[in-house]
Every structure is written in structure tokens, then in C-alpha cells.
Image (cartoon, rainbow, N blue to C red; front, side):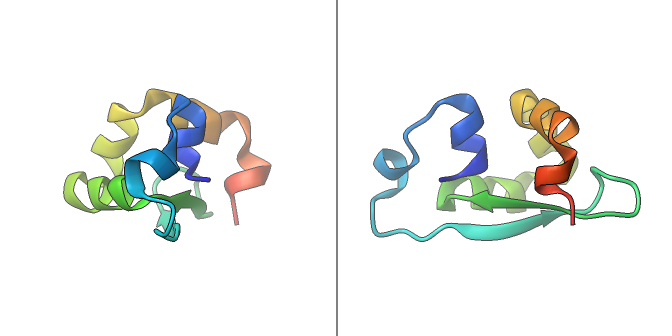
Length: 76
């Protein structure tokens, strides 16, 4: 399941189609000296690419809070 859709309560399969695979994306500016790894659907993967990491996290504040609260889950 897409991490952004999961946090926001969206049905990612309905928005993207059941046959679309998730992509693994990395955020480099979230943790100091570590990388946050996310599973993203096609829509959020394109949005991250088009807007950039900082604006993507501003647009999705629930994801930003989840990344801070669950550092062990996302950091690598």
C-alpha cells in the first residue's frame, strides 16, 4: 500500500488501478545522515518528482508527522 495513501486514508488501488506496482522512493532531507524509504503509488511518485521533496512534505503534513513519529520504520 502507498505510504501517503495509507496515512491520508485514500484507496490507492482505486486511484491507480490494481495492476500498477508501487515504487520505492527515497527522501534524503528528512533524517540527518539517514534516508527515508517510502512505497509510493504512481500518482504520488509523479507528484514527488514534479514538486520536489520539501514541497511534497508540505503538501502532505500527515506523512511528515508519520515520518517523524515512526523513524525506525522508514529510516535506513
